[in-house]
Length: 151
Image (cartoon, rainbow, N blue to C red; front, side, top):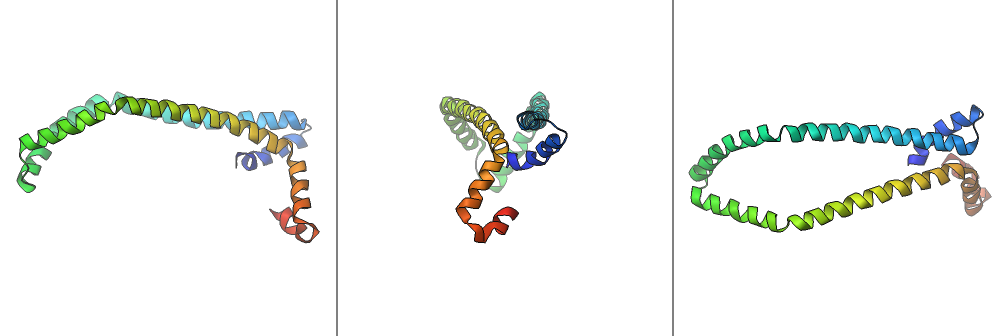
């Protein structure tokens, strides 16, 4: 998909007499810069949210009493029973904390590896697009040439 998105820009650079390798490289770098800027924007938004966490905690603490009273009145669950349920859930989350850290590290490692592989695959798909195109023409035969060319 990344290759398809970058192909028009690569062709534009090739029309400006850039060598195919350089045009492909420039297109990929600009694509990565674009994606990186989106990631940076999301990172900035998340850090802003994290800065607001103390305020959110304070508001939640204020609403906690209201919710506790509502649960006692409507659901007939005593505040002591609610505290026991919340403490049990908190203990379970704390016990599972190390597995969350492991999963997070694994996910980040996989994401980095995926980004590297996608970059290389994109480069080679754009660079060898003529060979790939000839391959598909030969696989699907002469009767399907117009359909393959459209695709």
